[in-house]
Image 1 (tube, helix red, strand yellow):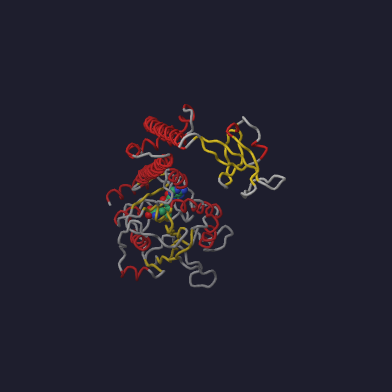
Image 2: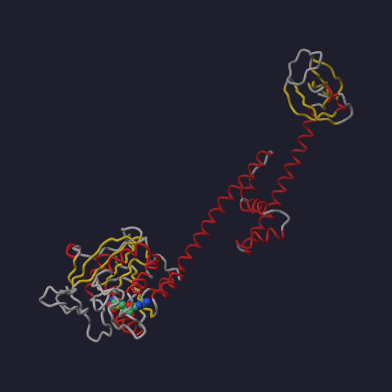
Amino acid sequence: MGGSQEVILFGDWNMLTKVGEKKSVRVSTAGRVASSSVKASNIQRIGIAKTKKSKTAKTKKGGKTVAVIRVPNNNEVVRSIKGLHTEILHSFKMSLKKGIALGEILTKTKKELGHNNWLPWVDKYLPFCSRSATNYRALYSYRKNLKSAKVSDLHSAYKLISEAKNYHRSITREETKKRRRSFADKKSDFKNSKSKKYDGRIIAGDNYKVMKRMLCDGMAGKYSGVVTSPPYNADFHYSDSFDDNKPYDDFLKETLKPFPLYTQLLRKGGRVIYIIGSVTKKKNRNDNGDYNHQIITDLLMGVKKVAPKLRLLNHIIWDKSGKKNPLNNKYGSFCSPKIPLTRCCFENILIWSNEEFELENIEKTKPDITEKEFKEWSWNVWKVAPYSKPGNPHPCSFNPKLIKRILKFYTYKNDLILDPYAGVSTTGVVCKNLGRRYTGIDLNANYCDYGSDLFQSA
Ligand SMILES: C[S@@+](CC[C@H](N)C(=O)[O-])C[C@H]1O[C@@H](n2cnc3c(N)ncnc32)[C@H](O)[C@@H]1O
């Protein structure tokens, strides 16, 4: 085929009449409507086609506007298309090569700078945005496939680039996950190292301040139990600086103050196991001079207010009768109904759970309570006589037997236990004997020293 071909274009009359100019016209070639660019000098004839239907505008006479144009013959067209296409593919391959090389530089630079410095560096020094940088890096990471790939047309070229982008996206997603995981590991290692700092520690100081510090050290949620007994305001002499005979309201306020910190230090389901006598004064009277046992009511209501996450799980009566009552209550009017007083032979063990009642066995240790123990101790009156080791400097330390029951009934092996009013760390000694971990705090450094010796040799 030589010369030129005639193609009939249907289009807008006004557009086609401007001979010699390059015009964009809406034309319909072989009956199809299309956007086309027609060099007006190629228009040979313009006329009206009355037979063909078209969607283009109709003339007043009712026919279609048509233009007959001359186009180069097929061979010429195909040759020039082929030539250009080969050139395009060649330059695409060259661009790909250069893109991979650029991607390599960017990948290495990113590695050297580190993830955090990368974006600011791109912003500051590169003439393109971080997304373009990522695309180049994608070419580099997909280089093996790119080098061996056959690019026969633009479609396969674009496909190849999008494959490179997807591949890169998938590996960077994996890298990000890894980076996050290792960051979380490092964070938890750091926290664990802190938690080790409090494992087996007996700290002399005010419990509120020490617990605040513990929270700053990442100890929130680390404890399974707070096993303790606060001062009862019963006029004991714990140390020269501590007043155990305060106005009742001050005593109550001071007792309630650390409760919100207990909830923060405890994990979900962790327990506050709180041993407290019903009498708050040696003389067994409140500030109005009434005889009362009001501390339990006030404590329960107060805890609801200051630490609402704590939920009352159990209330056990610790029956201490049988031995000399350390609170030394009087009979009142002996053998007369005048003002008879009951002699207090019990204390209360209040057990709250943090947020939920169930305590998960995180370490999957085997519960160490026997069936016999469980059956006996699940009654809510516990008869355990008070006991103090000879030579113990503390006026009212726990009987270890009582703590043994508490720990076996309410905690798992390896759980971390806190006693914020540790005294001589009876709780700590029993914890060690039963395979629990322990932190103790007491205001009195002498008790702490004595307790540390007991704890070390346990
Ligand atoms: C009832 S005793 C606990 C005795 C302990 N369970 C034992 O077995 O030795 C109360 C202890 O709380 C301590 N204490 C009082 N206020 C304190 C505070 N704010 N911080 C730390 N310890 C405190 C006292 O020094 C006392 O030893």
